[in-house]
Image 1 (cartoon, one colour):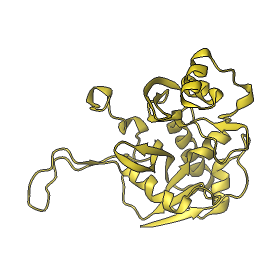
Image 2 (spheres, helix red, strand yellow):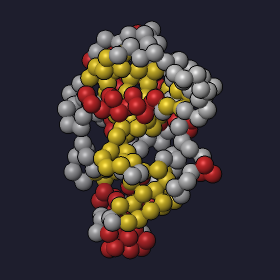
Image 3 (cartoon, one colour):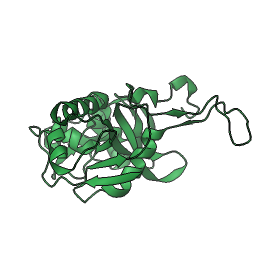
Image 4 (tube, rainbow, N blue to C red):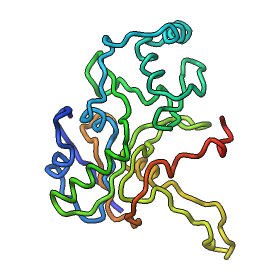
Length: 241
C-alpha cells in the first residue's frame, strides 16, 4: 500500500474546482482512495466566517466569561451544534448539526487568514460524492473519496484524523461471522477502515505543508455506496453520554 502526498500550492477560494486541482497535481489510478482535508472543502464551499460579523448572544457571553474564550467563536459553536455534551477545563465538546461529537463544533482558526474561522461542510458526504463524480467525468477513473478532519479521542492524548464524509467505499470492514486463527467465530469485530485510512494519510498531509490531499493506493476495498452515518454510533448504544 502506498500513501502519496498531493501538494496544492494555491489558497483555496470558493470559485475553485478542487477535482481539477487534484487532477492537475497528480496522476490518478483506478481504485485510488483520495483523502481530502476538510479545510479546503470548507473554503471552496464558502464555509468561512469573519468573526467581526458575529454578534454574540447573552449565553455566548456568559460561557465566554467563564472559560475565557472568544464570545464570537462560542456563538458560532452554539449555532453549529445540536447540543453541548461537556464544558470543562475550557473545552467545549458538542454534538454538531452533522451528528459528530467533537470539540468546538469543528470550528477552526488554523490555516485561514486572521480574523476568520472555518466551519465544517454542511454535507461532507455530498462533497465527497461531487469530487468523485467529477473525477470520473473528467478522466474516467473510478476512485473513492474520503473527507477527513482532526478529532480528539476519549481517554487518549493527542488527536487523529477521522472521516467526516465518504463516497465510494464502505467505511467499516466487518469481520463478524468469520473465523480467527483458532477457528473461533468472530462476533463483533468491525474495523473503522475509513478512519484508519484518514489517520494514515495524515502522516504525509501534516498541517503546514500545502498538502491537503493524499492518495492511498493499493488498499483492497469494496467500491460501493455508503455514507458517514455508518460510522456514527447511535445514541442508544453510546455508553459515554
